Amino acid sequence: MGGATLSEFDRRARFERLAVPLLDDAVNLAAWLTGNRADAEDIAQEALLRAYKYLDRFSGGSFRPWLLAIVRNTAMTWLARNRKPNMVFVPDAETLEAQSETQSPSSDDPEQALARRDRSNEINRAVASLPAEFREVIVLRELHDMSYKEIAAVIDVPLGTVMSRLSRGRKLLMAALPEYAS
Image (spheres, rainbow, N blue to C red):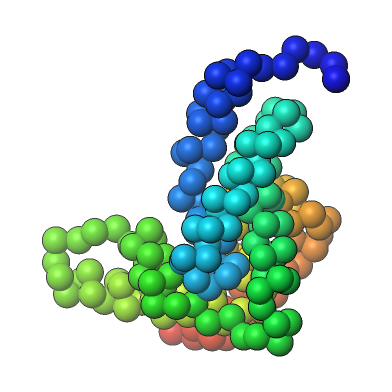
């Protein structure tokens, strides 16, 4: 093994500095992939353990795509083990609620807040109804604000595939939400 290895204390400190700020991103991505907040929390925990175990393989650059790739792979493995291939993705109420809260700013006007929450829930349901290959790129781009290049790294596909899936996913969303398409 080339180079100096970190002491366990330094390794833990590095991991906490890099990973802890991304915990919500990890859980949210897993929730979008699984449709269940409790499963997502378990998946994120397992992914963080894997990331810690393989921290020496992180060569620098942006930690976020590296970690979210681990979350995605962990979620896909979990889905393969725990769900039948023909199962339909339907997010549970807790997951929709949590996703709405992370996307909607608070408001002093209860009527506006309720309208925004209803709109957010409608959009979340439309995103959740997308086929998985389109849903994951939409979530990574629009909710996690990742670049096309970062998305390609996370899901391990060529850049052109990311662009194509985003385009098709957006078209599907516009068809599902014609009142928001402009």
